[in-house]
Length: 183
Length: 370
Image (cartoon, rainbow over all chains, first blue to last red; front, top):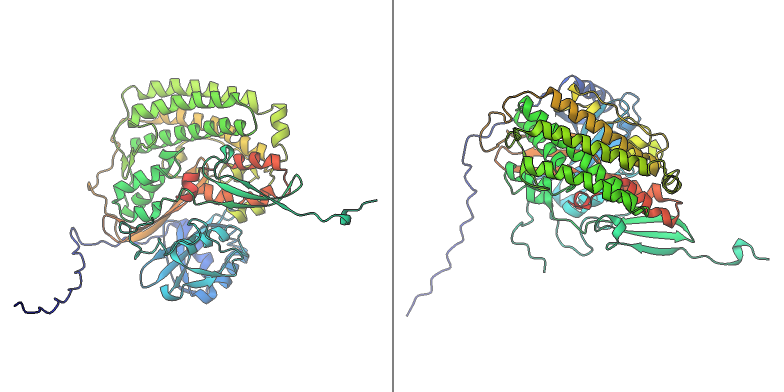
């Protein structure tokens, strides 16, 4: 007669130990061109900027998500910035937050900058910027496909990169890379 | 007597692709047509999505270079260059000068190969058979040169973080000089055959016009933006590598039509030829790879860099968490952004011009879908 063994409690997987040298943090230094842009941005976004920094000639400014449209408008309208091109827009998944980055370029004034907006993963929703740049539409659809961020005001949110009916958001860190079976 | 109101007209949907020889890959667009006129166009992409950005998060920095090869598979070396530059900026290393010269020579050769492919395929899109023979013949010579330098014809993996894999063969300089003379003759041949050809002009002049404000709003870059009249070239405006030491012109168009977009690329071929010649004159002996650890491990931080690809402005956003794998790699593919401007370009065009307009954007689907 065998005694019923109580099921062994599953131990939580230990985080992989970080091997190798200690992690260095790169210093963020702006060059003259970047400082110039950063100064212009500080003027235009002075009541909205939560945090700022930058590297080389690309400064960045973090703003609250309620202020996104107002900040973008300020970047477009303010005469010494005039960001006429949305160079790129993308999300970075930091697990506790999803960071949306808007890379704004001013080809006329020679400015480059990143506008950062943090959204919580369980309520990832921001205003769409399709009214300001036509290019925003496709970036937002792509970000919606891969990260599940909702964009209020984008007239067409059909899947762009993935097919209709795909489940899950493959851009997120939690999406399995090898275990995922499609068929 | 009948008036226009007497009949109800219905717009027709016309599907083009994904299997269509003139869409340059698996690209589908749905045209809404009113008779012969295109009212609206809806591009559908994503047939070639391989998740390169996701894959890159699970590869070491050195391996990510091979993924970049496969994005824009017509200008592989330009893609490798942009990723390596991003990683180098984060690590704060600068490749030695000879390495930079070799990178620029290879990148410009690849630009030539890419533009020659464009000239050939664009002529085919418009129904001319001969130029693709000339274009491919010259491109083949460049591919052979790549093979002798990097060992591969397409997926080179030659530009590495910190420089290039190895020095070029000993007879590189005289061979490239001979190659450039051949290619120049080939470009001139295509140019003479096509550029001011009456039929070609009739098909492309005034077709697919896009004005500068719309082009900027759509994020159009590269030769297609310059065709609309803005001299924006990353190599000139935000110089990188050894481009500041070279003298060259940035060709600018006037009308922003298909012909201008084509002609910008022909003119760029001549500029690239001159750039490579200057590089060969200036290049000196020396190391090609910077002193660094074997395994690239950039410090924690993020960087956004961009550079000039044959198709436009490619950008890379790289986030490092201090380990040997990138935390996030985002590519801003020029073809993806150029495709956004397809809709304003095609509005009110004829169906017969749809292929001419799409071809003039010179898209590569590997990069659009990633």
